[in-house]
Image (tube, rainbow, N blue to C red; front, side, top):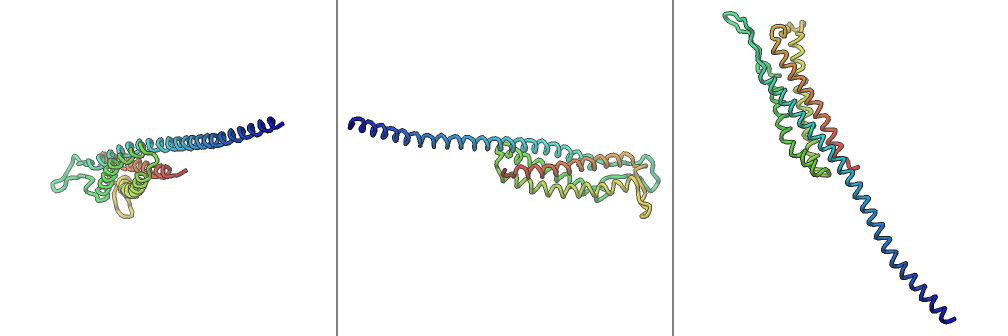
Length: 213
């Protein structure tokens, strides 16, 4: 009887020892599993943000192309009519109109900014969780939206007057005589609105990249 009691006590001690040994093991396994799941969620989030950053970089390349096209087209717009009088020569150039000068300067600034923003966009691809570059980009992208919208809108008003004129103000439509001039400035304005739209999309993507969840 004493022997059986001793055996029962020994078995109970062994069981308690095994339970104590299994408890830390189970806790460690649970911690590893939780850490693995958290890392997987972080990797998925990083992949999503990296995809957004890649698309951001592609959009900046497209905006740069459109901004350079608008700047070059407007900056080289010049037409001289083949007929002239003894005292007058009929010529139209972008620098005759201050609005078009502002347009060229604004598009040139936008082009320069897009070139400078490329490295920050690359940083967003390499380090998708970095907040600083995204904050910088969304700030200056918003400024560029305002600048390019002002340039495109003011140039559109002048192009409209060039095509249609204004009888109330006795402004004559000049596009019947300066057809090449009007075609070029119209193309530059269209390209500038493409730049505006892309900048708006970039602001949205920068905001998405800043989301924590």
